Length: 258
Image (cartoon, rainbow, N blue to C red):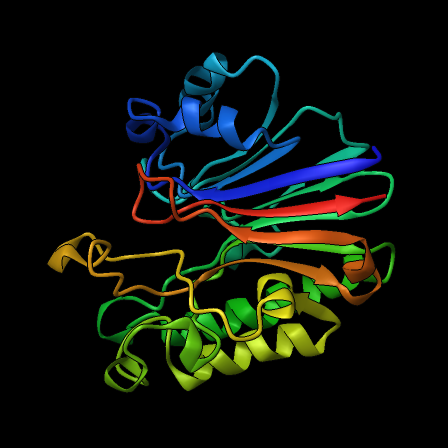
């Protein structure tokens, strides 16, 4: 596995995006491993949609609590050593939010972090999730380096959100509680790859479907590739592919050399 091209995409419904330019877009990006969040479908439904991508083997996690909700997947051209699902914590394992695959040089974790919800009604749960997830990936990191990718549902700094003042402590994804949770993840030994290579660049990964937000680029950067500090020298490129449509999120990329 000398050069590795990873792509991560919150697809906001695999059955919906597959009817758009998804297959063409994936072919253009040509990932060795593609990580998906918010598939919004059962395991068999995701498998059925991905039959159109025979080059990849799919490892799929779906919500047990609500059908057509949440869901994550890792599609890989390289067979992993092992794959696991969720975090072995009952309170956090009902919504199909985590898939972990182990490769020779690293663990790859794709995650769809819970949204704190309208009126921040899930903020307390979100805080518990952040603590549990940080502990989970820190445990992996003690064994070998980790790449975390997904929709982490938080804009870390003012540069990562178009309207920081209006949203601060009012909107899910930009409260101090969530910002602190993300910072603790970085403090546990991970690097935000895009911001590492692009310290001043304003680029977003999510735009609300309402208010014509994408056309006006009123967005949020809430999708990330985080890498263990020991891997950062292997990273050749960290990209936001906001030329691709089909979801309210755009894909992001990470290229590594081993």
